[in-house]
Amino acid sequence: MDRHEAAVDSICSQIGRFYDSKLGFRVYHGSTNSTRHAHFDQDAIVDVSALNNIISIDQQKQIAIVEPNVPMDALVRETMKVGLLPPVVMEFPGITVGGGFVGTAGESSSFKYGFFDRTVLSAEVVLANGQMVRASETSNQELFEGLRGSFGTLGVLTMVEMRLIHMQDHVEVTYHPTTSISHAMETLQVSTKDLETDYIDGILFSKNSGAIITGRLTSQPPSSSPHPLCRFSRPWDEWFYIHAQHQSTRPDPTTELVPLQDYLFRYDRGAFWTGMYAFRYFMLPFTRLTRFLMDYFMHTRIMYHALHASGHTDHYIIQDVALPAGNAGPFISWLADTMPMWPLWLCPLRRDARVSMGHPRAFTGTVGGSSADGSVFEGEYINVGVWGPYLAPEVEYVRANRALENKVAELGGLKWLYSRVFYTEDEWWKIYNREEYERLRGRFDASSLPSIWEKVRDRGKRRVAATGVKGWVKRIMLSNGLLSGAYGVWKAVRGGDYMLRKKTA
Image (cartoon, rainbow, N blue to C red; front, top):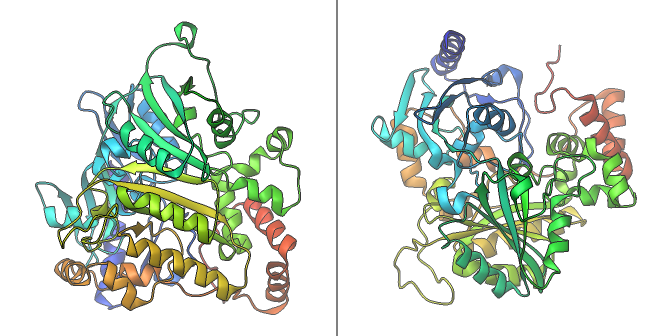
């Protein structure tokens, strides 16, 4: 704890100096799970990347005190040692506690526990004036609520206290085949009513084929289970989505026993299914053998690094959206007719999901074909993950993303803001509550921090800033299809920082 307090004192002093000199700054975490274009100036950052320690785990109280840059795999590994587990574990092991709290982060347990921020009991925050405060439901409550989905625009998160639940060793995973979009939506929502279910998500492989996947924590050992043991974390294991697709072709539901960590990070290998596109891009056969041979490159930490280094964020539609449950089916049907992009991911969310998503306005429109007559929608949401290549000129690429954004807004949905944002500023503030958000920013003296809009607004296609021979070579590589992909892979293997601009003399 002494090390933590010393680090926070240093952060307070640094932020105080920015505040006194009236200079803006950005918070630098060292890595990202965002696909937005982002670079940081070393002279205008507060570096919190070293806040990556688990301070304590109280087994009796089922509480962990954690610094914000602790990734999910490290947190799970330590809590499991004492028989505990975070209620919500994001599916990519590199997603951090801080990103889960002030960003938007959910998983297949979010229908039950809400987004990750709902598992946080209190937070330690350094305000933009350099003052350190603690916020919870009983102290600085307005700040605590405002931190949800604030993306670091109200203060710098330095520690959280979060609750844990009892752990079981395995998950009984059941695949429920679906034969239409409406069948999938119905199965998804019926599954959320089963009190014995701990996890629910789904994959649609086409309009007429999919699987709703439910899970139940169990301590039953494989030797006494009637279900076969199945694993997904080893290089020779099948990718989870491919296995789920095989199960979706069976006439009846099937159940398997999956080790807990294999289940929690089942989408890490191949980043759901987006790793498949890398094989297509490099014209490699997509077989179990080649997936085994290329396994090192097919984990999300490496893939994010390669994606940013290669500039391929400009060639993929990568959007997560949350829609009122009754509007998720119409959105998927629209998507299938306008820009078919299979598979799609489904994840049911609690009715408190909306307020965790970037300070939005309430939705009062039509849901499921029924007019709300001006009343605020307060029901459940469904997350739809839309991820795939969209190889088109920049103008068409932007048009397609804007069409998707407009349809989501029309149906009362919201985007995850890790992705590129194409709204105009006027469109943005029709969706998000400018008055309330700016009042909160004013109260906590946050003007030296960028607003959410300033952080996420699109800045156009990624440009190479390097000059001289090095800049020329880099521009040539990034303008060529195969070379840009190879460059991204090389940078990922080489490692190092891919977000922070190097200082120039």
